Image (cartoon, rainbow, N blue to C red; front, side):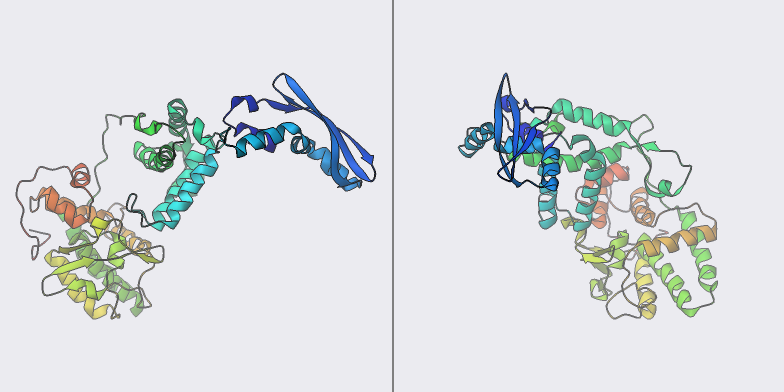
Length: 427
């Protein structure tokens, strides 16, 4: 589709969508200026265009005219003037390319990252853009936003589910098999498209958001994959091995970092904070007298910003091991500001640096590979399964927006609630 045809398809009136041109145009010189002679067809009629191009009669100009003769014929024909007049008078509505409209929505969200409706950070918006460019734009790029309907979006969803991709570590393995997307990933992609279609409804470009009708396919009978967490036996195995792990270095700098990791480990399984929240802690956030921690910030990819959601900003009690770890950390932090510090005694730029250390520890003590985030799961699972706290209370401790998130992740029936302050991981 050339530029002229694209512009014509943007016109909501179908009469203007069937414009074609003569297969070629005659180009001749008159008074030192190139002239053009061709036809513009619209419907069952045509218009003969024989006008000056206003281009000097040079070889270079002639080649340019030969290459762009359709655009030139369109710009010179009376039919274009008629359409332009009707557009200016509002008698014809102009369509908007989906790609242009969607990118505009995403760009505005980047500017208004504190928008309460979506409550997303700059990093989340970056992730949205990645999903948009990989899973949405390739299918819907050539459509107009006004033409988006239920059938088209249903077709898009089937296309997304049918494709196979390599993601994460798999892309580093030469012979890894590609996999279809998970239902969870589809839901995340739908969030991005929903944001765009919702805006289109508000602007009355479409009458209904198709995603409100089209459902996500049901999961297989295998059901939800259980969260990964450490058992009390796993925790004891790690604790028994951490002292040897700390001593098994030759440089004092590395010894401090390994000793600090023990404090990170105990703090995370005793507080349930997200890893980005942990490295974002400052000493002013710690209330040693009341044994509480205030979560006011997180660090992601070098940026210090607000926690994930409004409910993530919280002050919570912590377990005995977490408080003991903070007391120990005070002696080795080397910073008057940051609780957990890198080898240069400044804040970490990413939790990935600690996650790497956690993987080394697991390998050292002979446990299966896991993620640092599993320590948050360990905290929640320990409280719920031991019936120390209710789902609602644990949800608040974790900073979840809704207790159903906690319920769906850590399914359990709990009846009693007590304060966790001073309690131990081991009961």
